[in-house]
Length: 314
Image: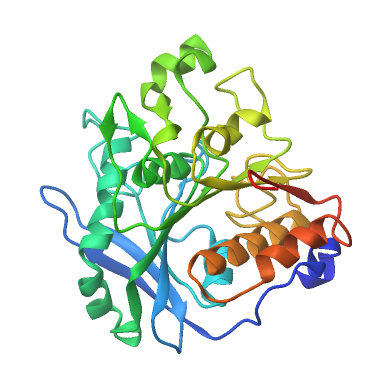
């Protein structure tokens, strides 16, 4: 990919380290099939921060699972983070009954699956002996794309009909092309089909990075790409918005440059997204990196044109 990267190479990022991966890790879930996970982590080092990466629902011709989003998961792991990816109940390979009342979206079950991962971190380490006693159970972030962003927004504190889904073990989150406000902000048909999108972002009190494609075309609303930025404007603790130029919902290829979910293959946009999300996460985890601040400067100078970072303090 490096031969295709031009502007994004000006964004600093740590040197890659060797990683290990375990799949499928299986966790027992009451009354249903086990939850399957992929874990990717640095091969060495201790006190590794954890990122739970939640996949989207996916179009009809694409089946998301624990095995997707390798461009993000591998990049984060190579730079010091332990990445855990579930195959959610909403995936067509999730093994849950399609006649279930919550099918096909299983929005509540998805949040429960993320909490089950946090409940069973010791079991995950037992099944992945190369990372045993190396994960930092107090340094946990969530990241989600599209419908996965909705799942993560709930865990970060967004409420639905007054119900609180937040988990105190989560310290930060990244929302990638996440659905915006529901209800009257959506078309009547979409509002009826997705009533669970009508969340209140104002309850999010954990540091949050929102990432949007400047050319994203949300079919659920007539508002345009800015709909996906609602969490940034609505959540008091959402401290940054990264608007990625020239790409849509796939953000240049975070699900994979050759994935069917990627409508625009843009290596520069993908590399920028990978480097800046890494920098933001490392900053939140207190890893002493200045890459986030330097990356913002680069976007205004040598890397200008591939994206823009907006903050509430600058």
